[in-house]
Image (tube, rainbow, N blue to C red; front, side, top):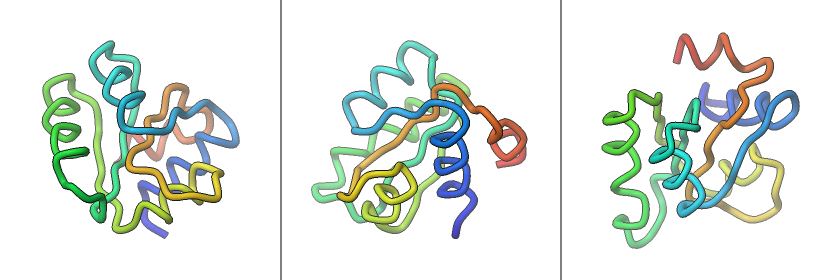
Length: 99
């Protein structure tokens, strides 16, 4: 499991996460996201292309994961998701710091 998926899973259990590209975009713009992960297999790519740039602009750590299904599982849902943001890190704080 990649570090990004581990961070999402731990934050889901001990903190707070939000799912979906629109939700994640809003959280980054407001500066409320602590960490962002997005899926590489999203089609069309334009859906998630802006996330790494926005995150960098706001100094928020961002990671790409291979599949949206993996991201969905880490986020605790049975379907894939294009993007996930950690709003409250919980026990994932140290993992995010070292990401």
